[in-house]
Amino acid sequence: MRPSVSQASANPSLLLWLALFGIGVAWGSSQYFSKVIVTEGHHPLGISFASTLLGAVLATGFLLARGNRLPLDRRHLVYYLVCGLTGTALPNYTSYASMRELPLGVISIVIAAVPIMTFLAAVALRMDRPEFRRVAGLVMGAIAVLILIVPETSLPEPEDAIWVGVSLITCLAYTIENIYIARYQPPGTTALQTLCGLSWGALLLITPLVTATGLWMELDTQGWAESALVAMTLAHLLAYGGFVWLIAQAGPVFAAQVGYVVTLTGVAMGMVLLGEAHSVWVWASLVLMMAGLALVQPRHAQSGESTVHHAL
Image (cartoon, rainbow, N blue to C red; front, side):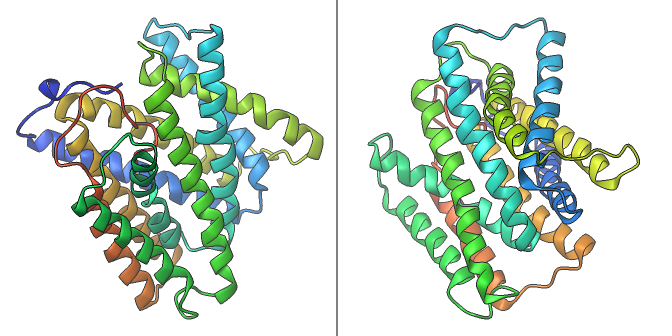
C-alpha cells in the first residue's frame, strides 16, 4: 500500500496538487452525502448495512477487474474481521448517529483528530517517538475538542456535547484500525484487497444486528437518500483509491495533506449547502485542529506499510 520514500516524487507537480485537492473534495463530499442520508430519517444501522454492502460489491468488482483475488487464509480472515469492526462497522454506526445531531462542520473538525489520536497511540505503544513539535500538535488537537464541548455557546445546543463524544468514538475506532494495520497487515496485501476484505468482514458483523432489529434502510429508487447513498459510496471508494495512488506518486507526507482539504470541504459544504452557521468557538476549534494536524505530521516519510485507510 505505501511505497518507500525513494518512490515518491521529490517535487510534486501541479497535477499532483490538483489530484490532492480533488481527492480531498471527494472525501469531504462523502460526509455531506452522509448528512443528507441521516436527515432523511434512516436509522444509522440500516445506513451502515446498505453502504457497507454497496461498498463491498463495488470493491470486489474493482478487484476482479484488476485481475486480483482476495486472500482467504485464516490470517487474512482475522485481519478482515478486525479491520471491518474497527474501520467500518463500529465507526459507521457512531458517525451516522452523531451526524444526525451535529452540524456537518463540527463533525468534519472532530474527524480531523484521527491522525493526532493515531500518533498518541503509536507513542504509547512505542511505535513512534514523542517529538516536542508533534506533542504540541497533540495538545492543540485536544484543546480544539475541548473548545467544542466546554463553552455552552459553542454548539447549537449545550447537550450536543455528548454527540461530540460519540464522534470521538468514531475517531478512536479508526485509530485502532490504523495501529492494527501498521502492526498486523499480512505481507503483500494490497490496499484494494484490504478495502474489499474489511468491507465483507464488516458486513458479516452488521448483518445479524440489522436482521435482529429489522432496521433495514428502505430503498426507494426515486429517493434522494438512495442517490446520496450511491454518491457517498462512490466518492469514498474513488477518494480512497486516489489517496493510495497519490502516496505512490508523491509520498505519504504529501498525501497526508489531503486531510486539510477534507475538513475544510466538510465545513464549507455544511455552510453553503446546509445553511450551517458556527460560533466563534467552532472557528477557533477549526484553526487549532488544522494547526495540530500540521504539527503532528512527520517531517519525513517513512518506508514500509502504514496507516493509509483512515489517515484522514
